[in-house]
Amino acid sequence: MRIRSRVIGRWIKRQMPKTLFGRSLLIIVLPVAIMQIAVAYVFFDNQWQSVTARLSEGLAGDIAWAVESYQEDPSDEGFAKLSSRAEESMGLSIALQPGRKLPATRRDAPMLAEPFLAPIDHSLERALESRLDSPFWFDTTRYPAYVDIRVQTPNGVMRILAPRERAFATKGHIFVLWLTVATVLLTAIAIFFIRNQVRAIERLANAAEAFGRGGDAPAFKPHGAREVRRAATAFIDMRARIQRHIDQRTTLLASVSHDLRTPLTRLKLALALGEPGKRNEAMKRDLAEMEHMIDEYLAFARGEGGEAVEAVPLRALIEEVSEGAVRAGARVTLEADPALTASVRPNALKRALSNLVMNAAVYGERVEVTARTTPHGGVEILVDDDGPGIPEDRYEEAFKAFGRLDEARNQNEKGVGLGLAIARDVARGHGGDITLARSPLGGLRAVVRLPG
Image (cartoon, rainbow, N blue to C red; front, top):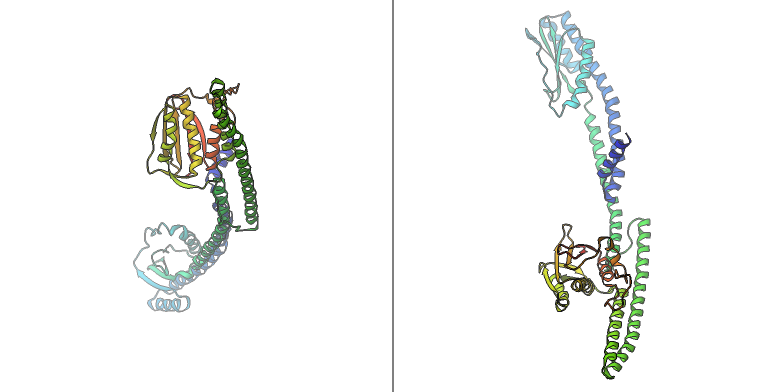
């Protein structure tokens, strides 16, 4: 029983709307619909059927009077007098069919009308059975405005056409119409107000997403309910604080870069003017490595956050990135549609892909770069190599800053362990990510996913 309840609960959860608009609309419309159904059920079960039963009983009493009156005086003059009196006083049209018998079967109601006519037929049948001793037959479906009732008499069949409103309450459909109109009107009002509130939340989500990708939404202003406006105002304040922090960090890094490069330039100049020798060459290599390390540190800290987003042809950008790997001796093949573009920060993405392609060229001899679209409308860039690869349980460790998957942190090897960290930071700054996997070439596959 408990397992079944869980299964039912999960099924209901899957059927629930996934959007805030759908859930809010369900919260408002569902109670209204349940209330309208309950009201309609009570109305038809009590009021409408009760009125129909009384009307059927009254009609059955008039028919019983007509049959008894005819049986008391079956002459033509008596029947004519009876017919005239029934027409004037009761609105009943009575005709005598001599020698006729009642129909053997009753005419079936249309399929769509059957649920509504069944209570009418049952009510009229009960009333006629309680008032008539003679066999009878009736049809409520043949004539739109009348009910056809026939009673067997010794001389034939007495046929009575009674107005439909005398057999049952005919205004029930008006009540249903009013309920339907009220439900539609309330639903339309609910959709209008909920749509306005959800639109304010969507604007806030779009502005936050744009800011997270490094873009901006200058036209964004707080809208909607008080709570949504508070959230939007808090976001604007947070965005301003983060932007000030980025600007201050960029200024600080520019100053640090300038201050560090000045003594490095003096040292390089001194070594260039010094006596050539092994010691001089070793010092030049140390300075070059130090300069490369400083560039890596500054690139990681800066994150290319101030660059504008623009639509860039990916094939041309990847070809430019691959030139360095080709010069390093790797065999690079590229597969990308020339018309494939992505909205990115070009220099930031170029640095990220350069780190991935150069990393593949260092550890492998063959590098394959593939750019393609995803089923969800995004872009996917795959960088494969035939190198030794990385153990699967250390994929995430490879993205850690200053991590080189080398416990000794051997400083004789080029690099400071920031290549993959910078690449992932750039991808996430675009709203995407980078993951690692086993390459079909036997080495490592880096997968760069960017949103559409």
